[in-house]
Image (cartoon, rainbow over all chains, first blue to last red; front, side):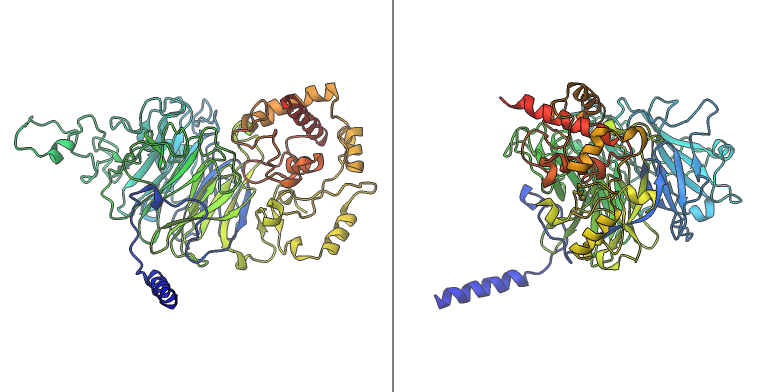
Length: 476
Length: 163
């Protein structure tokens, strides 16, 4: 018995002493994090209100120009400036509802449509270029990615004249249906512009867009926007894009070609594609410290998915939609359904109240639509990716604990999260709206939403307004 | 208290740090004379101030509810018709037309996300203050009288489901 105890003791010591290994992608279902885990540091956080009164705020960005300004994206087509200290400027930074004499340029008919996001050029301070992605009304909801240039004499407000004078359309993504439009545009650490697009909408990916390399739908695109204005396209294809060469016409050789080389022939592929097999990656975010890419891919009816792409990625990841939803089958039929796992697994996933058709409804650890915030390096968090849920108001942390991925619920709030972002100083930000599906009466009619920041729970400033949270006693 | 505070924020230090007696005192001090029902925030059990509306919106049903916690619209056919209209416009997208739930939880079983929702006062609290996430506060969208009518309609849905 004594010996057994000693053996157990030694085994326990070995477990404790297991050396931390570098984070890696899961290769089995078991390695994917699900609710109930603990991220290192077990952070305690609060959501503190920065400013409010925004009409359906759906995104927030920093310009990284040293000004400390935050740019809150309003769905109707406006961008509002929040100055350091929380003052919201009355005049919008951008107003796409006023650039077209025939009316707004932004389609907001469905709650998933509108102005999606803004991205500032890495040299914004010098060149004044910023980019927007929005559902275009004149183009029947197609996604327009447009470069606009700030007039240096009016740094806080871009006039309609200035928009029309400087607008350069980078690309137009045809959107067949009104939902699943993706949204984020963001510059990566490589200086290229990444653009997300959903599978085109309806449900179940009726176009099979996720797995179709001949469409931009269901993808993350990557383009080089630093081209002369008289270049033949508004962007250049980065040479190392995974399908940059795949569609190039060439003589057919059948012999002396390896299977690997044959597999690279994708003659209908779009060279802009960086990653594929996505359903609705509304919000992606680059880790400000190490350049890793985080993708919050909104799922359908049963599972939400969080994907991680290390900075070293060469692109070409297939995240499996619409063959899989997270680590599950699509269509999912039960708790142990069997199907091939296509492509790269997520690092974390969480269920809807019903994890599969007919499953008993669960309250704990659920959501319906994952909205990424960003990676936190403060408050005991050393690289914890934070995301919120649009339905359940939960805030999730995802991190590698030295052995495996962990997904922890940090908070359940009364907020309907729409997106998040990162302040120049690394503070994680989030926006919430009162625009839930049928509750949506239009971006200017809905009760207004707010901008929030993630603060360590023991550092909430006096008199700060914090989000209502579910306390354990009230939930039980 | 500012308008923004009414919509969901709260100022620190939180009342949870105050003693129960202090909360009760604050509540009594804040309540209009005659109001007898104590409302609590469904998320954290803190005191919830629900003013009795003035003018047309101060209906006998609203007064009765504040006074005794009783919903006089239950089983009232005209009120149920109005309650159904509210349900169809604001609720059924998430909770489904029959109340069986999809994105929002079922109204037909006994699994309540907020435990007091098995009472009309609890349901009213969730409608007024909002629950977690997408269950937003409806006080900017519905009158208290409409809330009582839709609660009566939820009872009707539960009755219809019974064999």
